[in-house]
Length: 155
Length: 203
Image (tube, rainbow over all chains, first blue to last red):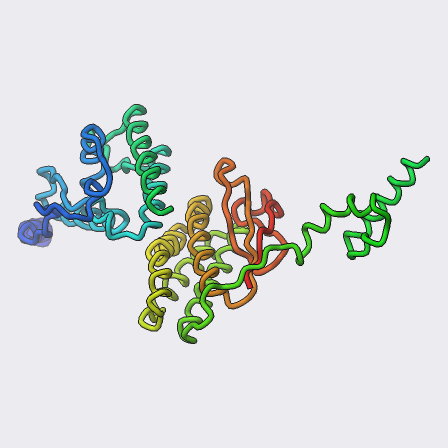
């Protein structure tokens, strides 16, 4: 009988303790010279879409929903963001080689068109990150314009 | 009667030309007919020689490994073998980590730097995407551009053929490198194994 009580109590204590182990937040006030916005013109409507649909995992600034303060959700989120930033970081765009910059944009376009990005698991919780057909077109046209500019630079 | 004779000579010349270069001994009609066929032989193939002549032996060995892993991936994709391609990708990423960049000349460093981060990313993604051969091929198309730049600069450790598949990615086309003259298309695998053309040989 006593064993039946010990297990849930122990779990509750562990749950309580892990709340104090918080991962550092992905937030920075620095305006980096390597940011894509410093390299190419980004119209306000495009910027708003990028911020809503991409920047949480692909920039140095994440908007954290309240539930990420609960562990282990916060840990899982931190892991997810670090993976996303390693793949592509809008704030560190300028640190990539010219070739990688162009290839990144081409694949970004591909991922948007095929609906692979933003991830479904993300849009499930962030309704404003879902891109409709018009928004997809706005983003892919912007990518094309950047590719055209960067093509002239490298030639 | 005359037309038939010319046709016969032309036919013979074309046939001849498949196995040897003796078509030129016949009359002028035969020579003109044979010209397109000779265009595909080795002598008329553009021959490229690598840009750098002095390369640190350790660097050359590392780059040879990178190229060999590239060919491994290429052959795996031509055989529709996603797991093998993934192994090749992982091995290439490791080989790149072991390359001693300090031994490169400033000029070589610049060229390597133009390709390094992009190539490494493609290698890692091909390594991670076992089971998704089409995604591996997307990365392979961009990877081939990087390896082509490196091989044109440093050489491939062996003569390599620069091939081209005009149909890949909705007819946008894509290049690849091969150690054999025979076409084995890595972009379509068994669906279109022999589709593609040889553009040049890099010695």
